[in-house]
View 1 (cartoon, rainbow, N blue to C red):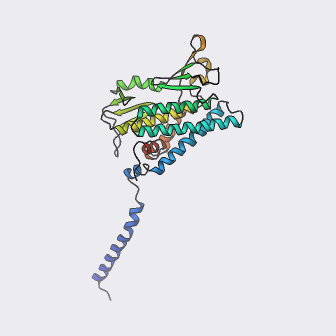
View 2 (cartoon, rainbow, N blue to C red; view 1 turned 30 degrees about the horizontal axis):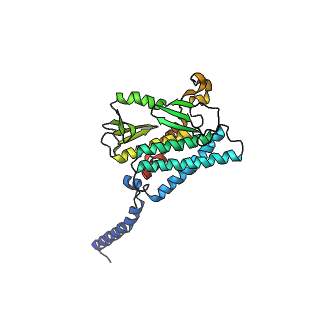
View 3 (cartoon, rainbow, N blue to C red; view 1 turned 30 degrees about the vertical axis):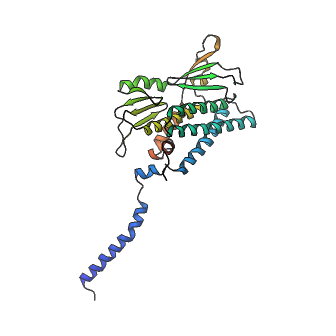
Length: 298
């Protein structure tokens, strides 16, 4: 008959073996760390998914805007909106890649061209009929010699109220307007952050705020977010107050210049839903920016 000490020793060995057996299972099922979740988005596979979403998503949203604004009259109109929307989506992807490679000013120029293509396709004009030029507080929408319509101003001046408000409020909180690598930003000493990370940049719409000592990749990352705002703007139906209330849109003498205010409602809705419903690291705008703001890791 086994003694009490022998029985206790047997139980000890059994417990030890059980612990060893369960160790691999525990390692496999523990939640991934913050760093592991970040690295999971910095792969070539994720970049290919980002490309597909930019091309397909921009094409679909360009068609959607065109349909909402009454510009799709037959299959040909729909096909043109889809095709040029896809080209614009590829342009937005290229702009984000360019920013990630350290040329944010050039990236914004490419994004402006891509946005013009999507907007022109959605509004029923020729793909190169108008060129949108973002200039901080205002956008200029310039009619080009390639315009296929005569009904439209030679120049549209559209104000962004968010940028105007930020330009007034941020300096009062100590942020200083600066030009970094050709990109207008607001600099501050400390943006704070959560317990797991230090926040060195923040972008809302087209307003970029970064810490003064932030490394270059932070500007690349935040510029990608700014490009996302330009992309949303290009496919927004009713993107200006004048689209809802044409009589409220002032027009210069002779009708050659119109003045308007951007609504950016689609961007605001999109950002609100991502923030309210999805964890920070899993939000698509963050996944996309992390995937493109530095070379992918193997």
